Image 1 (cartoon, rainbow, N blue to C red):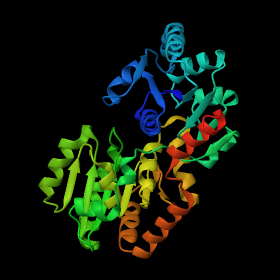
Image 2: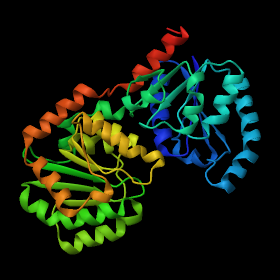
Image 3: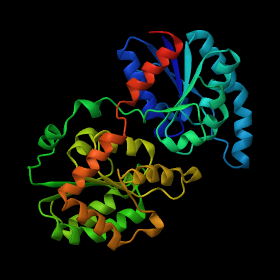
Image 4: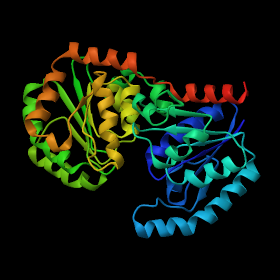
Length: 357
């Protein structure tokens, strides 16, 4: 089966596309990625891909640029289709998918959509009626895309070849040690970082055998490393980013994170409880609704950034890390309510719909 996966603009669209690509390749299919020209550096080596030069039509100026680039992008999409003759095109979200999906529609090539967030993006809203199927991460999205199936968000395979026991050995943790992971997103979260720094002393005083891995984002790494070193905190490890997220999250007892779909999906793939602090300026406030879906199923805590203060942050961390029964209950809720194997479910459904089994 020849498949084109198109999407981009952020890693949140590209990461699940790569996960589907990997699984399809392993199953003997022939996938190809189509991403924005500016996103080519996000594609690892040895992947078949094409780029399209198009941008998101944000403000008035960007809308003009989008209009000027659309016809060349559409013509290139037709050339890609003609050359690779796909059995279907899968839209992963982002405006780079628009010309590719439009070209597929006019050529009567089956369209499938993957929507990572609770509030769907504009391109997926435009094409969902044309899609054979839409694959959703959150049940709330059915309000906007009623032809969807809630399978969860595709996660890289390395999250499923690692286990908690082996991960804790890799992280050099003993049985009674607690690991708190704090993630501010790829750009870092200044308020969250500053508040958490104020909490460290009290948290370490009230939680025994605590280790902290703190991902502050590259922008804040040098400053936060210096502050932690000056404070002489023990077992607090600050990084701009962390390469081995599978082992880190599997080993964790509790996580604090933004509520982007990719971060949430990786956290839930390893069944770890979390506090989610949505990015307040996300489009359509979708991070809030992502987190709300999990809060309603007792799979995570939610505190909006405007409501976050030192006392609330400390209480959630301390009360959970000192309560194994509560942590285990949340882990069970995640196992019961979250589909970790989204990739295989999506690919199997596509092959069934197309009669390619």
